[in-house]
Length: 134
View 1 (spheres, rainbow, N blue to C red):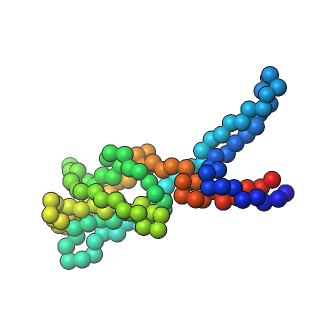
View 2 (cartoon, one colour):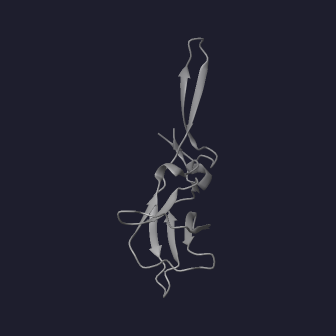
View 3 (tube, rainbow, N blue to C red):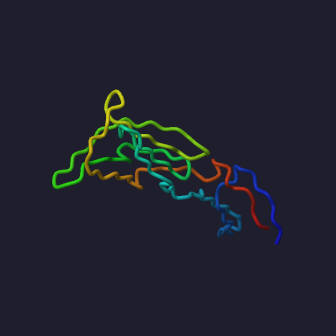
């Protein structure tokens, strides 16, 4: 066995199959890594006016991927403004409350990140495909 570097664009697993007509056909499938929430930080200043969610890689959020509700018998969805940045190749989402940086009132809340609404591209788009084995 010999290790050989692969270009960053090589981001798929492939299999060669001998077809009935004798032709060799190559099938490729993208390699994906499931995103993980790395940290959640509630603004610890005098006003709790933001929540920061950091993922372990760059992600794209579908609408309603993140929902904040009050806890209790009659939960209510809490409106927020979402902003996105990238830090060290991780997506960082900040939820802000109120039109001008309002404060989140004291209370109990449920923060939900719907894994089915968080999308990620192939690992190779981040440069993680670095080598292969012959």
